[in-house]
Structure formats: C-alpha cells, structure tokens
Length: 161
Image (cartoon, rainbow, N blue to C red; front, side):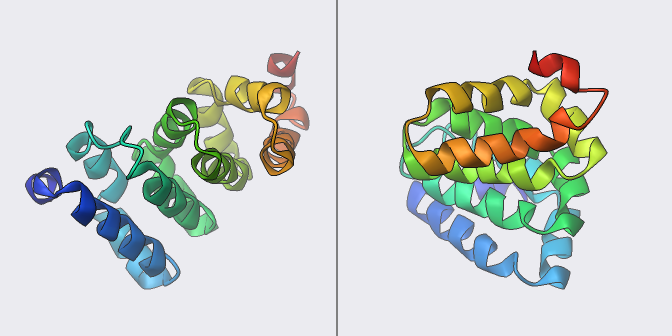
C-alpha cells in the first residue's frame, strides 16, 4: 500500500527492507510480494528515501536478494527494478551498495527481456564504467560477468564498442 510505505520512518523502511530480503528466500512469499507490486510502489513511495545513505545498503541488498531468484526477474524488471538498481549504483559511493546493484544486474543479465531493459536504462554503460573506474576487485569482476551475456548477443555487442 502506497500510503503505508510513504508514511514509514527511515528506520521502519530499513527494517522493512531487511524483512523483505529475508522473505525473498521463500518462493511463495516472494511471488506474493511481487504480485503486490512491491518495487513499483516502493520506488514511488520512497522517492526521498531512495538516495538516503542509511537506507541504500538495505534496499540494494533487498534488490539483489530478489534478483538472485530467476522467477522474480520478470516482475522485478516490469516494476522498474532495473532503473532502481542503476540509480542506487549511480548515486552511492558506498562499496556495499554498488556491489549489490552490480550483482542485481549480473543476476538479471541471464534473460533476454532483462537484457533489453538493462540496455534501455543505460545499464551497459554503467557496467562498462564500473569496469574502468571501480577500484575494488569484486565490483570489477561482477561488472565484467554481467557484461558477458551482452558480449555474446548480436543485438547488444555493438553497444560494447
């Protein structure tokens, strides 16, 4: 419910992210949360919170927890999840947030539909930039891994340069 999410304090929002992350491990609960348009409502209700450095690590980890499960990919993408993780990556300087965002893109890059949305949201450029500019090896490795499906695709290979 939009009104309930919008009225949460930052502390409650953090707890909600952590709880949803734990619940994402259960397929039935995960599907139910996605049917309720969790990410769509979240991104609308938490416009001011999304860039909050206190919430970003919890939200990024929650996103990667959902993206880890292939059955969540379609709904995550349709609800604007790709834009959300790219925004989290781009706005944060916190290594943990950036790693979770790159992991989300890595998990999503397995499907063609997700690849198209990642490309539309300028995610390929984000991954290429991560390979060039990140200093932590895990961030670079995950960005490179996420680029492999794009490099293997005739549709997206030209965008890699």
